[in-house]
Amino acid sequence: MRRAIRLALVLAAKDLRVEFRTRTSLLSAAVFAALVLIVFNFARDPTAVATIDLAPSVLWVTVAFASVVAMNRAFTTERENAAFDGLLLAPVSREVLYLGKYLANLVFVLLVEAITLPLFVLFFNVGLGHALPGLLLTMLLATAGFVAVGTVFSAMVVKTRFAELMLPVLLLPFMVPPLIYAVRVSTPLFQGRPLSEVVAGLRFLALYDVAFITLSVLLFSAVVDE
Amino acid sequence: MTADPALSVIRRGIILTVLALIGVAVVMVMALQFTPVEANQGLAQKIFYVHVPTAAVALWIAVPATGIASILYLWLHDPRLDRFAAASAEVAVVFCLVVLTTGPIWGKPIWGTWWTWDGRLTLTLFLFFLLLGYHALRGSVRDPLERGRFSAVLGIMGMALVPFIHLSVYLWRGLHPQPVVLKPSAPSLPWEMLRTLLAGFGVFILLYVGFVTLRYGLQLAQDRKEEADAA
Image 1 (cartoon, each protein chain N blue to C red):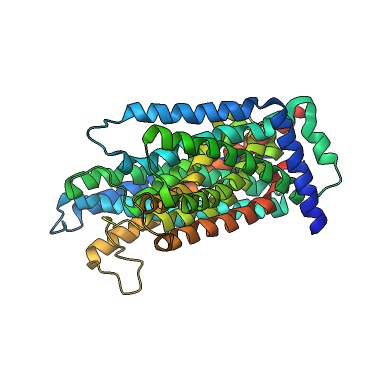
Image 2: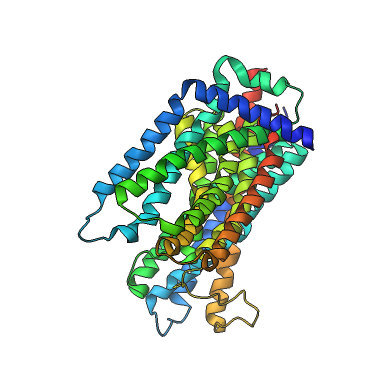
């Protein structure tokens, strides 16, 4: 068990190292998120809709789109020079391979979110105050679930035509339940309500995580094994 | 010369489909001519005899059948299961489309709006998009074995998603009418209406079987041709 976790971490570290050497995709994903925020700002009438009413939706829609863009990258780099075949030949189980990919994706998407959040606060002038710990927890729980599904799907779509289009079509329906709950949890948090009021929502997010991480680990070998 | 198995499946599918379509016409005549008009909703209620059976077949038969066939396919790797899952999912798209079209036609006069984000409506809409995604994925993978595995994975994931969608959309207050037949107490419909509705269930189940058989046969013919071309 400990060996499996160590191997998964080695794989995740490899992916992230490749990522940080170039930084292109992290930068592009962050710029994309910033642009979505800017578009949102111009898509509303500031005299008619109060920022605080719109803020949770803006944040989560931006996070959703930026995550899809970010996850598209996970297996496209593996395609070059058939790198993924080499990875499949490595003496690690498919479950460990999945976990490594998953962790790398999770860190990557969380980094994009970490860049998005301050920009959101800046552009929309939202005072986070003591909502921040609760909001970070919500982000972590929501992201952990849909990245699990996204990792499996991105391994599938790289082998299809129109991979960049296919991932959002497949993944967005799976992102909606966590997003609904994330919005439902963040709205009271933005209004300064205590964390104890949103425990039910957080529990739902955790349940989603457990279900889909388990399912993804089990199904990943069906995706990659010939 | 031996008979082509695909051809006989297709022929069976055509016969079943034609029978079912005649049945659908009969149910429509029954609904319009031989079933009393509902007191509160008037003629708009007639659409119920199409809407409810198609919804039931899509959500309780077609979609679960796809999910179960997907699980079995990953386990047994039998191409017949993959073909069946694909056929059932394709018919589910058609039935969902009928549900999503007849619903608003009824909703406009009765609710005063074409669409509302009620739990049932949202759930059906999501299933519809999941099924469309399923077909988009199938269409974009060329290798048949890969196509089978990928769509089975998506089918299983989709099945697991349904309870979560259910939990997240049912929190809103619903406008949608409650079940009148399949519920713990006895059906709350007068016999004349129940008769038409049950006939509706019968013909739409038959239509599902007919469509699935036909689609299965076509896929079988296509697979055989691909094999023959490859050989």
